[in-house]
Structure formats: structure tokens, C-alpha cells
Length: 347
Length: 279
Image 1 (spheres, rainbow over the protein chains, first blue to last red):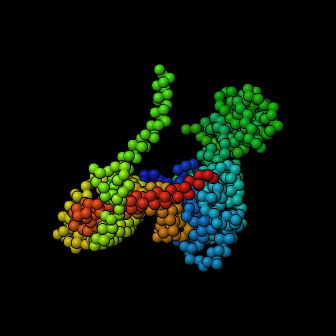
Image 2 (image 1 turned 90 degrees about the horizontal axis):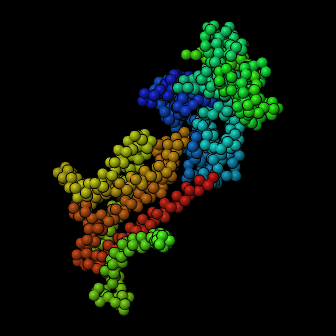
Image 3 (image 1 turned 60 degrees about the vertical axis):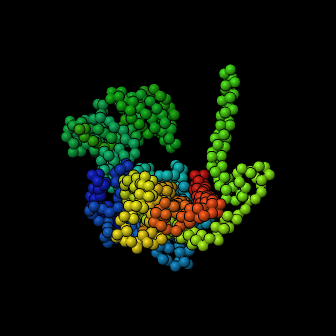
């Protein structure tokens, strides 16, 4: 049985449809990320699950029980917010204890649980501090501890890392994953950051305009995007104009490329071939072009190339050894590996 | 020539703010000093010189006022009215302001407009209108001394609502409410444990402002024939000018002390909040 189920949830704000028949199942202990651009409905879905918004139709189920009409304070869900949501008048320990007090849990048990979760988030020494005496990362760890202390049936994380700087964000991201795995709690994570989603999730649900575009593992979403929207939104994509020239074949600038994505498309139809930078190679026999940029990115280097015939800029992900020999203005050829490409029919 | 005018400009630029401050100080302090002299100095102005200036200062006028039968009863009524008015204000305006922020953000401008209406309605018009309605329908209401409290709530509203509104804006009220609710807090628990403690400074400001208005209000109390501290002071002035002026000064000192306390308390809170930006 699913730990959390969205069953045909529809939510509108005036004439704007925020969720359009939203269906999603979260299995016990799973971390699912809702990923999408601003306004796609991901936060609305989370708020409907938490009970802060009432769905127009559809249902929210926890282990099969319909909780759609239950008020937020009775749903037993833990939530961490984008902005630091600690109560400024309470200490760290007081914040963590808050949910336990509202549940009228006895003092010895409260103390035990507070100590337990503060140890889990490695903040045992800061129990007596107030929110204004903590860094942003520490505040979000306290918020996480506070949400976990009540032993919720589902943990809801609403862009908890977006207010943090890059380094803290990565550390806390890994920390959230460690804690989630350790506790084994079903978690719904909302973000617009694809890198964060790819790093932390068991499954990713990519959303657009209140609808689900694709649900899958991070690898599936990245390597086998179901739609052109997913392909463009998750990771970087190069767009190459081409013509379907066979059952699984597209011709781009006189180069015949084998690609399963062309299956089912009419021969002779115009398409956009979407290819990731790592699926482009430097190949002397490929499409000719000139190097316009060489951008060092740590583990890899992105080479910008302007293709001659179609006058289009593409990015190629190359190893450091290859990049060292390139300078701006060099003439090179670009090869395409079409096995993971996506074909989008031209309108 | 240009060099000289530049120097004059620079000099004026330096002393200008000090001159303005001095002028403002004279404007505000001179009447208070004159009041103090009228209340506690028994030397007529015509006899004032450097010898008599420090002679014959006395608190006798105030002592006489304190011995008046109605001094304590009217002061007690005004203090009770202040407490009742503060309570009604809090019970009415805090939930209203929170509701508007959380559920009806579009109505904020309308509510703000409504709360400033008492500015444009003169107290005498207010009391005449209310009395005309209540006299035939609920005379018992107007007969009670505490009938003044609702008037004072309305009169204080432009100040109190703003103070409460500023307090709500200073905290991320929606997130705090959501956080509390997600942790199992009912609306009442959320209000009591998550919101009110974090709005303490604005609630204090609001309470002090209300108390200050109640202690000094004369028009409505006089129109409804109520014996409040303000009406007593006015009546006593006609019998004992020096004692009456002493009472007026005492009221001024008391309300200034209240405002001073408010500033001190709210500044402490603000400093605490400001440290948040250091991280």
C-alpha cells in the first residue's frame, strides 16, 4: 500500500489551474522529488498534501485512508519550509519540542526525543541557542529535526535548500538524504533545481503547468526524457534541426544519425533533435564548425561550437585532456551519438 | 568671493542641523517649562529676576489636588478604562489583522482605510451619532462609565492597528502559522505560542498608545458626562489653577514615561532581531 497517494487532485486559483488531475503514489520510505519551473504546481501539490490548501476535487490518501478533509494539525505530517520557519521566541530545543508539546507527550519522553533528533542532525550542542544565533544551514537542520521529532507519517520538504549558499546547500542536501535513509521516512521533496533533484531522489516527478510530464528514476529522467519539456528542463540540451530519413534515422546537415527517438515519425518530416552535451563528440568526420568558447567546469569542460551550415551554437562535454588542446577559433568536426536523443516534431 | 561663499555654505551645513534641533527643542521644551513654573513656582512673572527665580518652588498645588475626593476615583476609572480599552483593542484588532494578512490580503488596503476613518470623524460627531442611536435603544449602555471604552477603541484604532500591522509584517506570519499547524498546533495554540510571543513589541506599542489616548481624552468623556481623570483635571483647573496645571503636567509626564517605556522595550526587541542579519 502506498504511504502517500494523490488521486486525481485538481486545484484552481481563480481561472488559473494549478493542479490538473494530479496522480502520484509514494511508496514507504521513498524520497520522491517534484521538479519543475516556477508556477508548475509543485508547491501547491505539497500544500494540498499538508492540508494548507483544499483540493477542488480528488483525494489525498495516507496508507489508503482519505485525509482530504482533515485539518493540517491532525494529519501527522512533518514539513520543512523554504524560508527559515523557526519560532524566534523559542530555543532550538524549544522549537524541536513544539510538536511534542502540542501532542501532549510527557516531559521525559519529550526530552528523550529532542536529544535523539538533535543528535541525528548533529546539533546537540546548540539546544539552548535561539534561531537568530544560528546560520541558515543550522536553522534548516533544526527545522528538519523539529519536523522529524513528531515521527510524522510523511515528511514534506518545500525547497528547503534554496535560501542557502552553494556549499552549504550541497552539504545539507547530502545530510537530508542520509537522515531520510537512516530514519526510513517517506519524503516528498519540492525543488526547481534539477541538480538537487538528480542527486537526492529515488524518483523524480517532472511537472509542467499543473501536470506530470514524467515520473522515473533520476537516470531515466535524465537519459530517457519522455517529452521535449523534460529533455530541456532536466540538464542541458543542444537543438539540431533535422529530417526523418528512416525508421530510426534522422539526417542532420547531411549526416545520417541512427536514433530510436525517430521511431513512429513520418519519413521526410522535419524534427528538432535534442542531444545532451555528453552525446556530442569531437569527430573530424562530423559537422564542421568553429570553437567559440572553452569553459572549465571542474571534472569536465564545455566547448562551445558554432556549426557552419545551420549557424547554431552547440555545447560539447569533453575531457580535460581534449579541451587543453583547443583554443577559440579552432576548426573542428562535431559527431552525434543519437542513442539518447529526443525527437521533437517541428510545428 | 566664491571661496568665501563656499566656506559660509560649509559652516552653515555643519551648524544647520544643530540650529534646527535647538529651535525644535525650544518649541517643545519652552511650553513645558512654562507649565512647570505655573504649577510649582509661586512668584508672579512681573517679579521674576535672578534672585526670585530659585525661590518659592513648591509641590503644594499637586498636594492639594491629591487630597481632592475625586482625584483618586477619576484616576482609578481612567486606569480601568485604559485596561478595558487595551483588552478590547487586542481582542478585536489582533485576530482581524491576522485574518486579513492570512486569508484576505486583497482587503488590506480597505481595512487600512477603515482604520484611519476615526482621524476624519471628529470625536464630538462620533459621540453625538452614537448617543443618538443608543439613548432610545439602550440607555443602560450610555449610563455606564465603561461606555467610554468602545469610543476609545475607535479613537485609538488608527494608531493601534498600524502598530499591530507592523508587528505582523515584521514576522513571516504565514510560514510561522503553517509551521505551527503542521506540527499539530490548533489555531488557538498557534496564536498563543507561535504568533503573540513574536509580536510582543508591537502589542506593547499598541497597548501603550491606547493607554496614552485614554488617559488624556476629554471631549467624549465630557460630552457623555463621565468623570474621568481628564474631565476632573479640567474641572479642578477652574477651582485651583495652579493645582490644575500641576495635574496637566503630571499627565504629560506619565504619558511620556509610557511612550519612553514603549520605545525602550521595542528597541530591545528590534536589536535582538537585527542580530539575525549577522549570519
